[in-house]
Length: 211
Image (cartoon, rainbow, N blue to C red; front, side, top):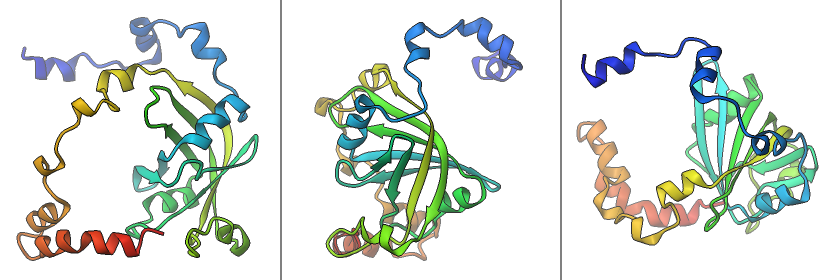
């Protein structure tokens, strides 16, 4: 049997089988999880310029990158976080999911830090004019704000960051070695979409629609 074939045959079917392989979590892994934002966890939220937003809906799962100036996720109180929905591609996959199934997961990154912060909770999409206006940048308010009720929050140890060498410039690759968005669009449309024009116009388009 090949390695590829065995990957599909030796499959865990129950939680008991899974726990037999991995054992029990350490004490530190248990006590770090709480249901509110304490000052130590607030420090990571306020320093983070990048968050992964995971949602679930009838059409499937979605994980969306969210980035802004450090502290763009506002701590309203110890159980409530608020995140502006900045300009994007208008697919609104995450927002569609939240409207139907409010369960969300957040993963906060802080450049240079190996520690990340995880939040699980329930979200709503608010279009309250005053709330949206309070998140305005350069006079431009988001069209909505994602309001998250925290169910659990805890830090994630640094192993994944260290293994990936995420913040090590020597591990970074030249973006020119990757396909451009325009090249991908051109290939997927079999040449009907002008990918070169898309790439050429991107910097100016992004500058005008950042907020």
